[in-house]
Amino acid sequence: MRSRGHRRVLRYLPSVKRIVICELEKLVPAHVAPQFKKENYNVVNDPRTEIIIDDGRHFVRTTREKFDIITSDPVDPWIKGSAALYTEEYFRTCREHLNPGGAMALWIPFYECSPAAIKSLIATFFRVFPEGIIWSNDTLGEGYDAVLFGQAGPARIDVDAVQRRLERPDYLPAAQSLRETGFGSAIELFGTFAGYAPFLKEWVRGAQINSDRNLRLQYLAGTGFNYFLSAEILDDIFLYYSFPKEIFLGSEETILDLMDIIERRY
Image 1 (cartoon, one colour):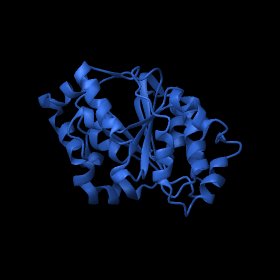
Image 2 (cartoon, one colour):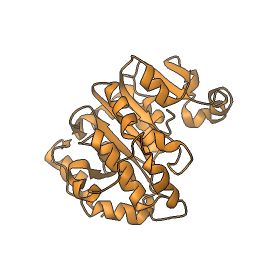
Image 3 (cartoon, helix red, strand yellow):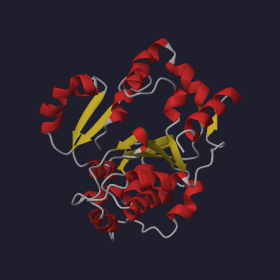
Image 4 (cartoon, helix red, strand yellow):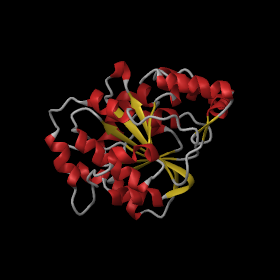
């Protein structure tokens, strides 16, 4: 299960004791990753890192291990075969391999996808993670892509506690990594909130669930290959926005600032 920005921050969290990277192509960690040591913080040579040459789905299905965090960064769903990495069965397998309180993060594209494909993908994820969250990358209001986040239980985020942690000396590298990607504070990071599963039930109503038996997403995504509707898709999700007081915790000032950052994007 390859990861893009996820590993940037994980690499510098002092509480992380072990990092497992599944990679199907053995040339990637051996020859490609070293070419981007600055960008990936030389993660393949981190003593905490274990490289598994295997299909990510196969590894999760066959291992007895459980994890605090599983990140999945599949290729675009319109690519042949990739729909198998967005199925209900795959998501359930990942959930079953999370420790209590563990979380799964899944990268998804809004570009070159039809609204029906995106609804199918998100509805499938939310069926497994009924309190899932959408975090969007909407630079310049264009939508582009997003991260789906699900936990083995309700998500509760103490924004002030995260900010205090980022200000600790041992977390300075993590804070610097976030600044490099445009987030100067916890409020700015969580200001990417775009949607919450309980608020989007009407939006995903009737969406086709992608399963191992039908791989419906393969067809839906293929029909949207030449679509550039990412801004429209994000705007459609924003129509169902309501600030999720049950997710975010913090001082009154912090919550008001967070609400302001989020709502300025709508």
